[in-house]
Length: 70
Image (cartoon, rainbow, N blue to C red; front, side, top):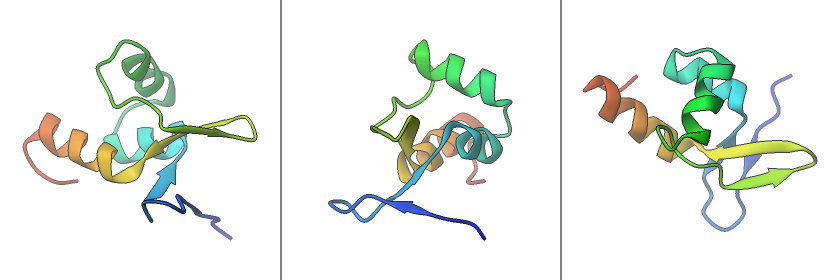
């Protein structure tokens, strides 16, 4: 099973730090460190202790960093 969190207002999938790290090819700690220092997208929500990022924003950030879509 792979549950998915969808933002009701935007319809965008929301990702955990681990999902963002997997997509960006970084370690989880590296991704969260980048986000804390403003080098990665800011989280958009917290839900039951999970910090969440908008997947479309993370995908755009990765494409901008690498010059190609992941």
